[in-house]
Image (cartoon, rainbow, N blue to C red):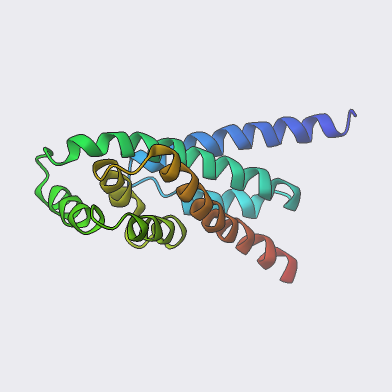
Amino acid sequence: LRHKFPSFMTLLALWMTTFGVCVAGAIIPFINTEIYLLSVSALSPRAFVWPLVVAATFGQMIGKVAMFYAGGGVLRVRHERVRRGVEALRNRLETRPLLAKGILLSSATLGLPPLYVMSLACGTIGMSVVSFFLIGSLGRFVHFAVVALVPQYAKALL
């Protein structure tokens, strides 16, 4: 027990930090959660990878839910480029809910279109927040699993 206690505390601290960085990164676009997760994974034991992926997924989706709810007001944003991008995406997705869910999954998994813009757009088209959270979480989990496992496999090869 004595040997495992510091490891648990380290994991807890990394989990909470990862969660916080990913919430912030979901809202502030210049915080790169992938670089953070790559670094933490490279410096952590393999046993920490899956808890970190879960922390990153939930942190990111909590932040994206905030963006989802902000979507209603984004059409009044003064930043013309963001407003036009969200408006164009909203017009395409509003009439095709299944397409919207497929694009959300692609966005959460691959980053195309950017999940930042997609979160705002989904908030304007009447998608349920539960669907948004579940689909986004699935995509983010896959995305972050790949990001976190790359340095672990690199360490194993070297």
